[in-house]
Image (cartoon, rainbow, N blue to C red; front, side):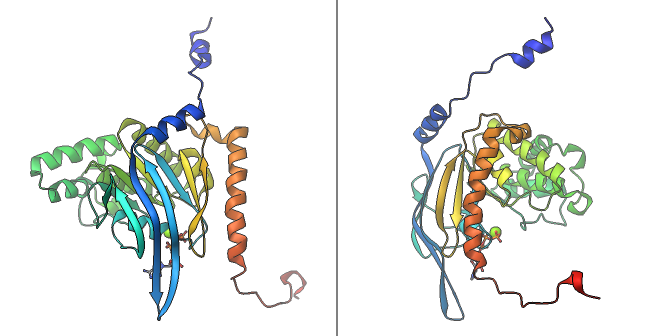
Amino acid sequence: MNPLEITSTAPNAPFNHIDYFTKLYARPVILEIKQLSQVFTQNKVQRTILKQLNLSIHKRELVCIIGPSGCGKSTLSRIIAGLDGFSEGELLMDGQPIHGPSSERGMVFQGYTLFPWKTVKQNIMFGPLMQGLSHVMAESKAREWTHIVGLEKYENHYPHQLSGGMKQRVAIARALVNEPKILLMDEPFGALDPHTRQKMQRHLLDLWTSIELTIIFVTHDMDEAILLADRIIALKASPGQIADIIEVDLPRPRSPEVMYTPEFKALRARVDRLVYAQEEILEDALPHIPRMTPVSTRK
Ligand SMILES: Nc1ncnc2c1ncn2[C@@H]1O[C@H](COP(=O)(O)OP(=O)(O)OP(=O)(O)O)[C@@H](O)[C@H]1O
Ligand SMILES: [Mg+2]
């Protein structure tokens, strides 16, 4: 028999999603959101952006947050990061209230740029140096991470000399070098071309399976959410509340080929229905375009 055939047909232990989620929910809760609300006041008018959210995220879970534009995904990310406070409720990490930013929560946000005047290595060293590590130790950690994200040849390059995908890898390394327990990512791959984006998704999944890490990942891309997540938290807008929580019962490890399977497509249809229903509600608030002469009939 052809040995390649043996490898390709050798049965993996079948994925049992009930078993997978039973084990996941048995892990300790790392982040707990209780009755959390966020109200912004603008021009003396109060707007409730997030309303009484409740969510428990378990250790080593990969959660994706989706929802229509403006529903409060970034607001929630910033609150969890400790960058913003909140109006009501409780936010606990390992049972302790979150009061501000901490190296326990790493951040990779789309607009969260690298220091342009520092090289790749210096950008990654920044966190460890801030934590009081010696220059030698910080440099050694930075080297390790430039290697993990495959940028060892670029360690002395400046951000402007890197592609978008490389910059995001530096941003991931810069967050993970501090050994956070939670990595918060807000549309981290939104500006990348589809090919680079797919490579970054694969890279992130590889990292997540290799280190002890809980990931909270905000995305507009439904396929990305299904490919990555254990659970997808679908938010609805005005005010932001949880519309549904979807357990992604696709086997792991996942590769992009999983997108061609009927199971993936069924999940995609479910997620689409959820989000489009929300967008239809939002569209009511859009201005109506006045009737104009159709372009095709203009002389
Ligand atoms: N600091 C602030 N002050 C007042 N309003 C704010 C503030 N930050 C956000 N908002 C409002 O809160 C709402 C939610 O914004 P947020 O950026 O969280 O949405 P989002 O879900 O991340 O949207 P997108 O998908 O477009 O990134 C928006 O209506 C926004 O205008
Ligand atoms: Mg946002």
